[in-house]
Length: 151
Image 1 (cartoon, rainbow, N blue to C red):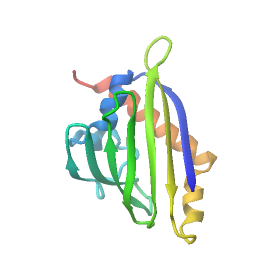
Image 2 (image 1 turned 135 degrees about the horizontal axis):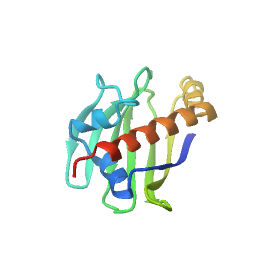
Image 3 (image 1 turned 45 degrees about the vertical axis):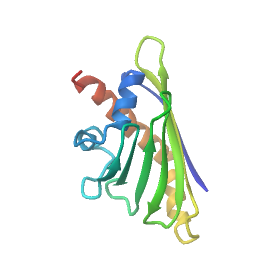
Image 4 (image 1 turned 90 degrees about the vertical axis):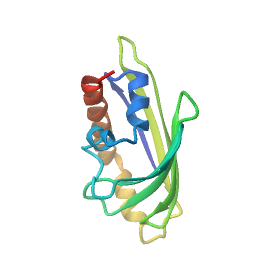
């Protein structure tokens, strides 16, 4: 099992964080342009509180199909149902109000069941320097979302 954990503050409100994470319209590519590869992204199915999408990060050798669920008003969860690395995983993100406005975001995810040949690369993606990269990409995306969201 390989884990990633992110904690950071953003100027986006908890409601904006939730909307950014659960928007599966064409705006998703704009919101997450720093981390999502438009060549891979595809919504496969969706409902009122869930969506299934194929996604990958730009320049990543891996793609995943995730089932997102936001039926709990306090957390967005995802489960990897298919992947190019032949493993699975799951994760969640939660945003709570930060003092003075904005949000504190806590996100965790893990990749499980990858064959031993894929584990070294998955590990490298999840080590400390990459955590800073992921944290920075998420924070920048959510700050930008807060600045540009039309309500």
